[in-house]
Structure formats: structure tokens, C-alpha cells
Length: 257
Image 1 (cartoon, rainbow, N blue to C red):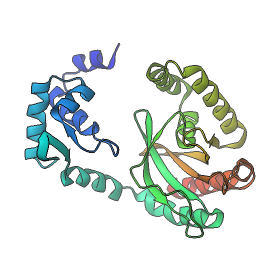
Image 2: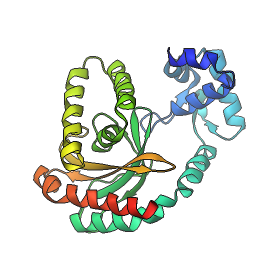
Image 3: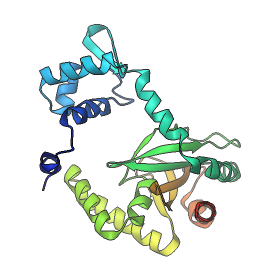
Image 4: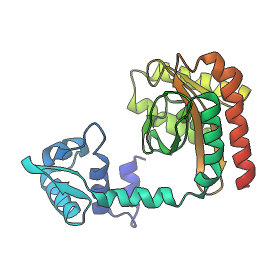
């Protein structure tokens, strides 16, 4: 059954609310201002419906009307994210360990969770020792190309992972054979070493390693560490950073258990 079919049979599902929230998802860092026509194209909703939704969202403080009939996200949306991030006790447990690792290896360390077919950074620690790649909380990473996403998939129950991988296949039909092969390699790495790698596959000349953590309330989280390949080589990931990240996650797991 399709997701739409499941929603049609769910009497508790409020379609109007879902449509409004989907419109908010249309805004991205690269598409920060959108018109009703843009939103109709991206969401697949009729333009009159979009016009009513944007009017309502603007009245509620979630969208800001701009000149030329465009909109951007307003501060009301940020309040949701801040409330969510502020109520994650695991950040207080993980941050000291993440800071130590970031400074020791001279790389960025981050914690992320899944949102659909992406991973989203919930916390990011930059190394104080040297210049490295700068990321922000809220950064999205493709689940199939990033080390964080591969670690997440590797830690899922096999049947659930297959469902998610079927969504990936439908989203990337042409690239799927290559994606599947890379994921299978990542799953073998996780079984053998406890971590997954991404070597220039999400971003060119950027290497990273990730380890999943099973949280009793939040489900699977991923901790990753990476940087430009001239600083963070594959050998460094495999020989040093990967095992250290595994230990970091074990230490966090012990504290939350």
C-alpha cells in the first residue's frame, strides 16, 4: 500500500495540517525564498490550496511575506527547532567527549538523526586545533552517501533497512546498483569494525567515518567524524579515528544505559 493510501485509511490523519507542514519542508538553504507557484510545483498541490496555506502560515508567524509574491521561513519555525534541540539530554553527555575527539584528531565531530532519506545534524563540534570543514546544526546529509547515513542503515533491523532501501531505489533508480554496492560494503565494514566510511562519496575530497548508537528514547543516532582528505586520510580513519569513535559511542552508551 502506498503512503497516500495508508493516510486515506487513517482517520486520525489531518490532511490540511500535513499539507501545511509539507510546504514548510519545501524551503531549503539553497531555495530560501519561494512563491506560491514555486511551492505548488515542489509540493504537487493546487495553486489555490497553496495560496490559502501560505496565507495561514504567514498569519501564524511561520512564513514571512516578501516583495514579488515570495515567502521565506519566519522565526516561528526556528522556535520548533530550538525547543527540540534544547530537550536532548544526550547532547550534554556527548558534547565533552565530542570536543575531546575533535581537538585530538583535528576534525569535525557531529551527532545526527534520520529525517526521511536524510540525516540531520543535531550537534556539531568543530576542532579548535586547525582549519577544517565547517558544518552547522541542521545540516542535511544524504543517507546513502554519508557515513552517518550508512551507519544508521547498518544499525537498523534488516527488514526495516530493506524498506528504507526500497525507498532509496525508487528515489534513485538509475544510480541504484552503485548505491546498493556501496551500502553492502558499508554493512560489511560495520560488521567487521563497528563503523562505516564515506570516502569522497558525499562531497568530493571529504572523508568521514560514523558509528551508530541505540538510544532508548530517540532510536538510532549516528556519530561521525571527518574532514578534507588531505587532513583525514582513509588510513587515519581506519587506524585511529574509527576505533576512537567506536570507543566514544561505547562510553556514551554506558552513560545513558
